Image (cartoon, rainbow, N blue to C red):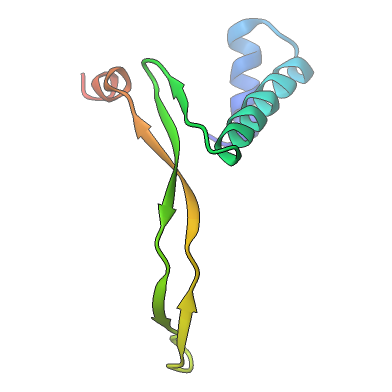
Length: 91
């Protein structure tokens, strides 16, 4: 399922028109991204948790040239599924 499919399914499920559904989906994604950018976690009870994980820097190699490079530390979004979501997939 891609974003357009999600918008279509939301419109069908809720009875909202497609434009309103698109605004709702975009709004939720924007709020999740803004919260993660601010360093907060987004906890959706029964679904899961979106968190920011810090990835350590280090040394690496360029596979084409073999040259050693320095990899900078970075932040990565992570999702941990909640128990209810996991259970629903395994029944």
